[in-house]
Image (cartoon, rainbow, N blue to C red; front, side):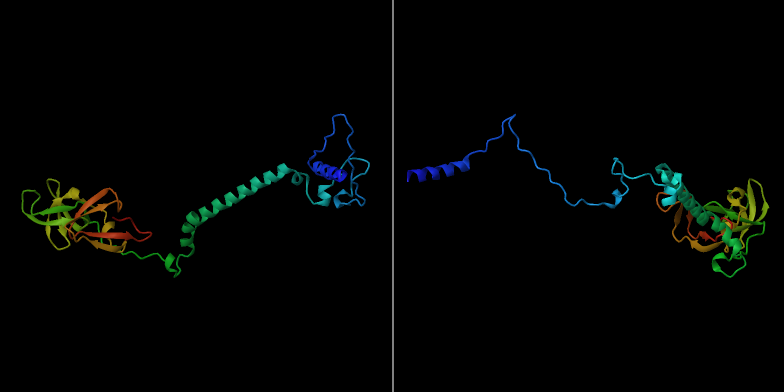
Length: 247
């Protein structure tokens, strides 16, 4: 019984015993090397010379792949990329120039005389081409009975209103006739000879001021004041393409 107890106790303590590490300089068990019984034959190693450490012989790139010496070099590939990029940018610039600059100038001549509405030039009939017509450039001009500001005021002539020039007068005044048939004298500096702003065929829309006064601005928001016009002033708007400039 005592012997059996010793064996049992010895087996228990053996579990907790640490394995002794081999001492430095002691014998180290040799490690086994695993050899492949069936070596793997890889296709890209067929050209390998078993007697030398090399990976096949040099290939003729032109004969095998159809590549020249320049094409086989990496530097040539980069140069070709830059050339391709430059050609693409040049083609894009030419396309933009052709669409927005050349075509608008060439197409009207090519389709001139056709019935295509886009290229039909509008016929402009000028009603005020006579040299005697003038246009008022000030907001309002007093039509006086005599060439003197102290005389009787006949009427007010509004901005952009056509009048007929009759003759010059003294004190910087001139004699005019309105479209209503009124005759009188106004300051000659308040008139201009350019009648494009009142030609009906040059413009598509006609605006009549209905408020006591309106400011004509360069822009709809935060624009610069061009002219202050009064009630019943007639303004022409949106000139047709190819026509003379108007107000």
